[in-house]
Image (spheres, rainbow, N blue to C red):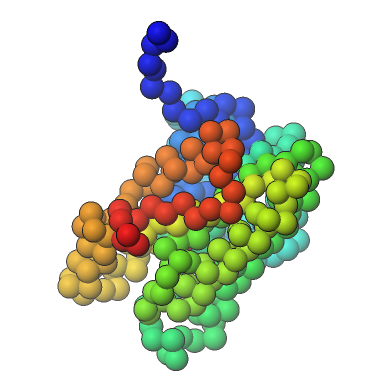
Length: 259
Ligand SMILES: NC(=O)c1ccc[n+]([C@@H]2O[C@H](COP(=O)([O-])OP(=O)(O)OC[C@H]3O[C@@H](n4cnc5c(N)ncnc54)[C@H](O)[C@@H]3O)[C@@H](O)[C@H]2O)c1
């Protein structure tokens, strides 16, 4: 009988690009994947925070690279993927994680700027990166694209209509691409967290009164926010070959909210 050993999902040597990797879920995923032997590039709008995550990875003995990008620019995204291909010599996994929310407001009160910014970053930005990822992965035999959607991509989200629309859009892109590119051996999956303890959620909570904060924190049946460690562990498993038959899936991390 073979001995049972506990082994984390194997991502050793995987070439991984993570957008929005300077903060929250993206940063935690970059640090976890690098600690497990993946070769990681993070890309983000924030130079300062990107460099901080690079230093953290360096201090942990698992160096990663950073490149500044605005995912709303198709040209910047193309340049980012060219850089990643040059530095890593290929791409196995792309995590499209860069995203923003907007302050809770009724649909008719949202400004044009709020709506356009949310859709441009969360939806068009993901499409830019999916398009660039396909161009890199198709000629080299395949890969895996993991898009950060949300439970707001699976159900309504009162007060967050533009965010909710952007994340439903990400689900549409993910499921469509999963079918279009299966023959090229490129898989597409979405990760759908509920409220996770990150700067995005903390900043929104700061605008709320105590009762609303409590309601948000207790939105999950587990009556707490999720942690970036819980989400990055799921992303690390998806990034490994253990997820090889998972395609077009919405991987929900919500403490049971949608049950
Ligand atoms: N935190 C949650 O509760 C939660 C829940 C569900 C889904 N998500 C999704 O997970 C992803 C990460 O969220 P987070 O909570 O870690 O957020 P975060 O604010 O901590 O990090 C997001 C990162 O994206 C970067 N970014 C924003 N606009 C960009 C642009 N135009 N180009 C490049 N980078 C840009 C920011 O600079 C930031 O570093 C987002 O897509 C978010 O919608 C988060």
